[in-house]
Image 1 (cartoon, rainbow, N blue to C red):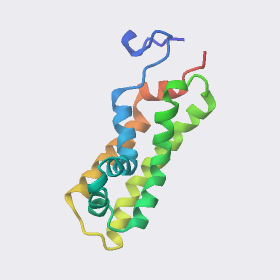
Image 2 (tube, rainbow, N blue to C red):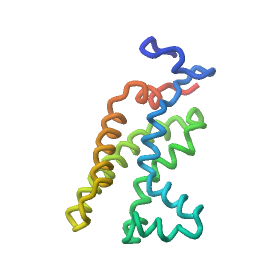
Image 3 (cartoon, helix red, strand yellow):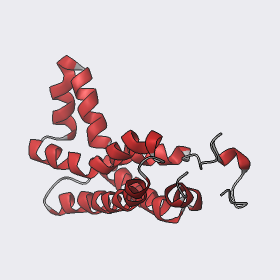
Image 4 (cartoon, helix red, strand yellow):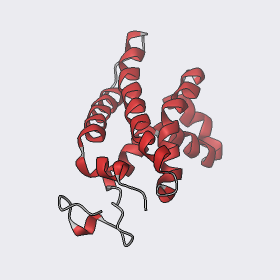
Length: 149
């Protein structure tokens, strides 16, 4: 059932709420290690340089893939969310949990001796904004709580 809180353009032709553009940006932010992994694989000769630039400790890279798993799942399931309504509703909470992990992770790395950098601070600020948006955006909440057809 359509709500009067949202603009008619927020719905697709099937009456389902469209996912906001910022949702895709948050997914890219959460899956940043996965994006780096794909870029390193696609750049063949410079892949090692990219990996060493962002993840000099290769163990941190493999751990960095874990918080991005819910974002990758959201990318894969977004087109079939009406077929997986329970999983889709649970995925919102997984995304919020992953965002909390990413938000805590960077300061923990700083405590263990990683140098403070502008990129790290920017990531923490982006993680805070993304977490607040995931929790508070009413349109996004409606996308995850909408009844299945």
